[in-house]
Length: 169
Image 1 (spheres, rainbow, N blue to C red):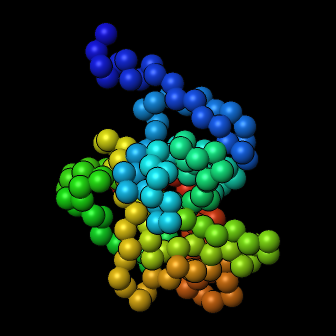
Image 2 (image 1 turned 180 degrees about the horizontal axis):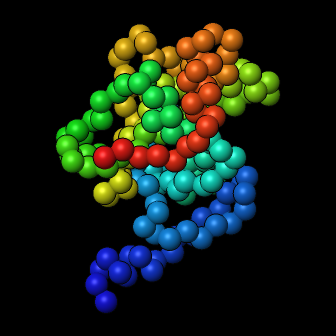
């Protein structure tokens, strides 16, 4: 049995205070070596499906830690960011396929729900390693409204609401 086929058969168990106990295939684990901003010790995550367009990025290391995320590609040309090619944490190369995860802050009034476009998480699909970067560009906010009366925000919110889960190569 090769090392790769052995890893495909491995299962990782973890607990979630929100969802109970889980067992997931080891190859689905996303490693974020530097952690998410404010959570440097939580470095291993899995994606859990939720209501479209949302998913959960759930920590394996901390049963209390889970982020609601949306697919960054759903923002279209309005969110035109360059992947961190050469980054040591993600080991992202020019030809690698990658995903962009945008962390969402859900409010009790859904109209006030926002997305953090300033600090996306890039995941290298080749090795499932990721990195959160900070974009130094005033066009991107930490509190981008997903649903708004403003045409630009409403357009992006509508795009996000259509679907999630894409990756780019």
